[in-house]
Length: 540
Ligand code: ADP
Image (tube, rainbow, N blue to C red; front, side, top):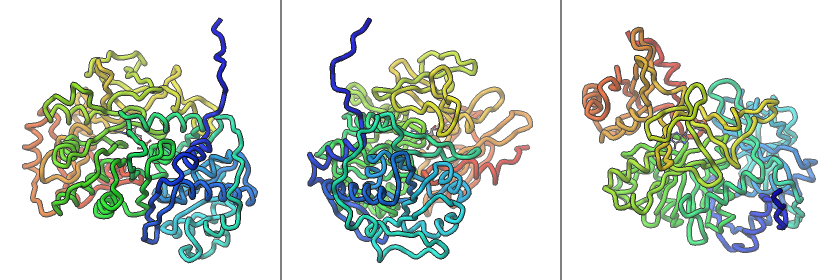
């Protein structure tokens, strides 16, 4: 019979991170782009004080442990304070994706039973449209002062954040919660059916945030300055708002300004060393940097995930700009990062192209996570780098069941991700596609990700996407969408010839559609379902 260890059983709590940050790194800076434009500067100590004031204010509004508070907001310092005040007091911080369809927003706010919703002024028109359909929301709190809070016609319960917390004590006794209590709630984007809620526990978040700080993950520390571009409404901004405070890292928030020029300016002026976001954001940034012949003075590392990072972009960051790329994989159901690509000491001796290929894979599991790939009968496939199957994941911060669901989401203790992947002998995982995006042709599979990566390597291509189109003979065939770089000429024959040198002949798309832009969703991913709606006919 194993003995019980004789150590204290102190819970892993989000309030613990805040108080640690305030006590150990009180002077550390938080720089935040206000929704109305200017930069705002504060410190960890001040943010902690204001989080405690907010906790008191929410209690006075009648919210209790277990209540839910929604947010429809950018990455900014008030949103950060709310992250801690809400979860720290035992309530649930429900971050809403503002680009959900309004009907879905209403659905998630009601499903989560949000009693207060925090919002940025940008989203006032949205609030106007949905407020009447969210009867249990007793206050809509604009994350601003009185001067920057718009009146919303027809919504009487609009407060502003500064007045709400004003006069409240900066002392708050954070409850000693059970570490398994719900702390934050995030809904999947619901491309099929209603969005599903994932209720993260304090334990899951603290463990993930601790792992995120490790040198081979994000490598956060007091020496670094991190700019999370990944939204705080998208999987807790990959837990960076927690990891930064845990490690004492200077935080820079971009607010609503996510375009290339604004991000570049902020990175340079605040001497950002680490950033994180989806590939589409980095494409915008690199375009700006290239067109204006700029360099990064302090940026040394960028974490990328959410969709596959094309190898051509990896190469550009690493070789042209000397910025290391860490490519991670995760999903709403995995709290944040689950795997991350990394170059080992021996990898770093390899030719540049081989290094890019390693980084373009989604990498190895971080400690706490296990993965496997299975065939359609659930049999585990070999780790040989070529056997493709559904990726299954389990670990200390993986969902067990969706919010308010009676049934487990697991299959024999593993979460089925809906991604198709390979794992090699070294444990390196590569996402080949999502089960719904893979193109099934003549009994074989074409990876839309691999085709997109090949297309984007063409110098005239800014963005590429591939979908499968029904075909009478082959079941499905690939259709390629291209956004040209500004001022570049590129025709169908050029790109198809180029692809013929990069991929197997039967992979070469049957047709190419040139677009001005691709439909991009709230989390920065190309919305292939939109492309399917418009172009998903039948090839003859
Ligand atoms: P959704 O994309 O449906 O909004 P999530 O934001 O939870 O949902 O995204 C999770 C999905 O994003 C994963 O299942 C996977 O398909 C994709 N994904 C995440 N990171 C990567 C990556 N590095 N490479 C390829 N695909 C990725």
